[in-house]
Image (spheres, rainbow, N blue to C red):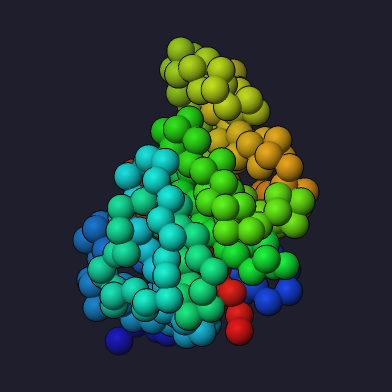
Length: 244
Ligand SMILES: [Zn+2]
């Protein structure tokens, strides 16, 4: 049986909210599509749900801009997903929200006063499509106020590592200010976490925290790009839940 120890960095999204990011320690892969034993993944997701105190809803992420609101109905057991979306929003205490990543940016959002939480999967395409803004809009449609929203931008590929063709850097930076970056070796790159933070700040979110971890540089986190170079392959999760 796999260890039920939960490698997780808790983050503060305000009173009445529990949130964090799972680490890759011990091969804590939460993906159901990368070849991991599904019983092991189910056990890890169960350990995560236990820490959160509620089952975790995951979406089928497609690098789009769709936001799915999770109602009070409990999500189906892993490895099922609640729907196709790159952002999840809920006002319910009975369900936790999760986002799976390995280099793309996991974003956790909460308005502790209005009691609304959200997760966002923000890769390059989703960020350009506006998924971060759409998630915030969905929260505000439910009564959240940007000035009360707290955000954590989780571990992701950083702007010194995420090399892209110069034309792509230009195209993305034209749409999302704050993404223009240069690698250590001086080539074109994108700073997706920086772009996410800029979108949130521009939208009036007062409390934006950026984790400094880079998934490509730090083997504590799964990395799609670094997997070929010895990094373990897998996906880690950002999770958030409203506590009763
Ligand atoms: Zn980096």
